[in-house]
Image (spheres, rainbow, N blue to C red):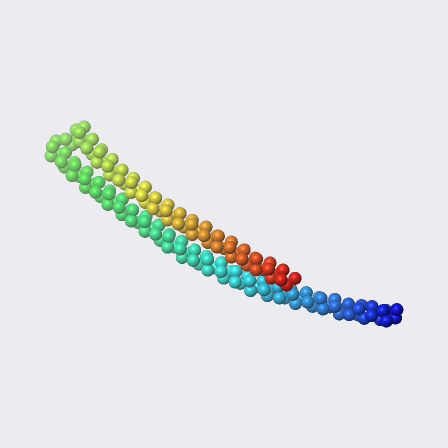
Length: 169
């Protein structure tokens, strides 16, 4: 019995040391976990920053294309307006030479001319809008891909943390 009591006393004395060791081990584990999380977060943020930088470059290019498209179509619309004005002057001169300037037939000719050029302007505006919408769709696709990539990276890093915690618990 005395030897058993002595063993229990030693266990109790070591128990204090074991408790202290456990506290030190927990502190070491917490420090290690904090360092792992910090490295993990830095790597995650670096990957996300790369995705966002790429997205900015892509969308910047697309936004430049939008402005170029708008400018190109504005030139075409202006050229159409200039052509319309020239054609109206020619028609008016021809009508004046024929004495039809104020006749019903003269007004109908000018109306047909205006309608033709206005339809061309409407077609140009519709084509411009379609081209711009296509570019906006490309921007939306790039943003969706970036969001998906960010989510994937977050999942990968979250899984790495979870695996590390499981392996070290």
